Image (cartoon, rainbow, N blue to C red; front, side, top):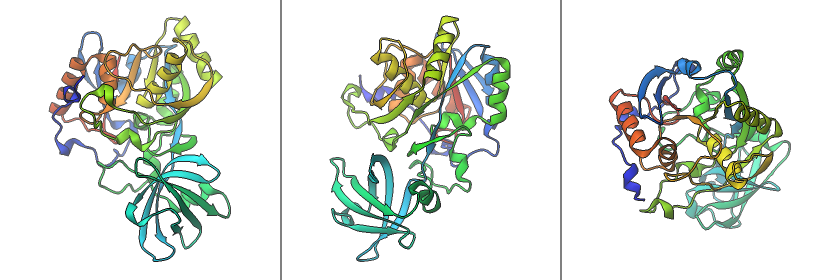
Length: 342
C-alpha cells in the first residue's frame, strides 16, 4: 500500500500552537464508520454518544519534562538532551543536539552540577546511551531542571506545563502526551460516570517515535518504534463486563487503542492483565480485536496514525472527514480539536 494514499491538504495555519483556555472547549467531529456520515459538534457533546455500560479506556501515562539543557564539562559548550527511554540503573536512551559534540566518554552537567551524565554509546539510529549521576531523587530533579518536549510542529512556548498533561496522568514515562485525553476535565469525567459510563485505565509510555515520519514508500516496509505498556486486572474485568453485556469499548487516543489491540492480538481477542513492549502497526486490512470506537485528535498527513484511523473507519471515510475538518477550520494535532469514530 502506497504511503501517498494517506496524504491530504493541510494549511499550516490550522496547526494549533497552544491549548484552549478551557480543556472541554474543543470542537468534536463525529464520524460514523459504517456510513461515513459526519457531524460537527462540540467536545462536551461526547456524552450524547455514550451509553451506560460503555467503557472508555484512557492512558494514564505522565509526560516527563524530558528536555534538558546542559553544558559539556570540559568545554562549556551548550548541549540539549532529550530523554527517550529508561534502560534502568540510571541509564537512558536519548537524543542529543548537537550530536557531533557528544561522543562516548563525554560528560555533561545540568543545573550547576545538580545532575550530571556521561555518554556511554551511540545507538544505531544516532541517539546516545547516557548514564546519570546525582544525589537525591532523579524524577524530582528532572521536574526542577527539565522542560516539556513539545512536538516539533509546535513553535510557541507552553506557559503551564500541566496543560501538556492529562488530568488523570499518574505513571511517569512518556516523551509526548497521549493528546486525545487533554480534552477531559475531572468534572467532565465525573459527569460521564454519573451517566453510567465506565472509566478504565491502561499505561503506554509514548515515545518520540510517534512523530517519526514514514520513510518507506510502501507502508508495509515501515518499522514502528517500541513502547512499554501495562494493563491491570481491573481494566480487563471492566472490558470483559462490557463485552458480555453488548456494550462498547472506546479507546481514548491511539495509544490506548494500540495497547488494547496489542494485548488482544497476542491472545486471539482474549484479554488478561499483562505488561510488555509493543511495536504494533495498524493500517487498513487490520481486523480490530477489542475496540469498537475511538476518540482521537487530527493527525499528520501520511502518518502511521492516519493509517490507524483509516483501518478503523476506512481510508475514504477518513480522507473525507479530514477534508471536511480542513474546510471547517478545525484545529489540528496535539492542542487541536477531537474526532470521535463510532
